[in-house]
Image: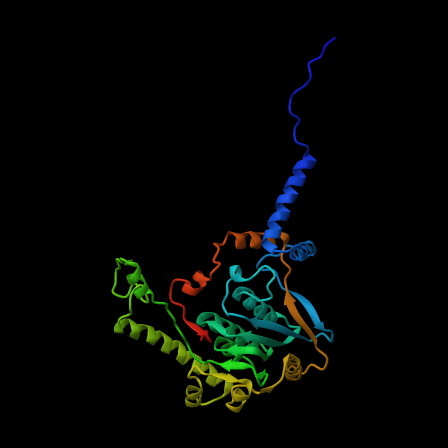
Length: 341
């Protein structure tokens, strides 16, 4: 008896589909990480981590073992005020939200007796710097002793947050100072004219397009902007005067925007002494009456889903190979306690 061969296509094997999905995921991770080593770190971190929510507490990494009393090191690194989306997948810098969360946790932990803020920052947003300073002051009011350790740079907003500390240490070559406020705006009016371009604006008020890059500011607009700068500057001066116990006139003399070395800062009463992180920890232990404290840092390992989402999000950002977007800056007015050239 003759039989007709079955020509119906076979369904793809489940195992084959799984391999295809695995290859797609691997390629995506490679693009995001850049190297096989980077992906290995990412996968290893994800495998050992447990999913956490934004409300979850930070975990402790023990730096020095000791008694029940704890000293927490909180790093304030890079530009102050960055959002979660601006932090790299494997970056050590904390976003503004994460930084405030760490300070809040330390303030509410009865075992934490002192906080050492490790500063290496040129400053950042006025509001962000003020929020960190206020959170540190709240921790101090709650009974925590606070000591600041300045690294390579602790300028402008980086110095502002240090005003919450009882003692400030720096290296003689630390760059600090730049005490003041700045608003900067790029103007490309002449470039538009040369290109034959003109911007047309319909606005509800004369100053609705304040600091437009397509035209020069009027004298009235300049007065408005300067009044905002002066107000924030006055607040900065008050914070320094209170934090360092200096006469306001003396702070005004020092806070003209210039930078200082650590040695010059000590001569002007802006820091307490020279030393590194270990010296700051020793002082914090002494202030908190701790003979053998346990010194910790906070960390929170992300889940695989969180890491994968961050990788994909970064890949979706438009390319900027020549840095034009960075050069032009973000739209809007940005009031900063930041050291700028």
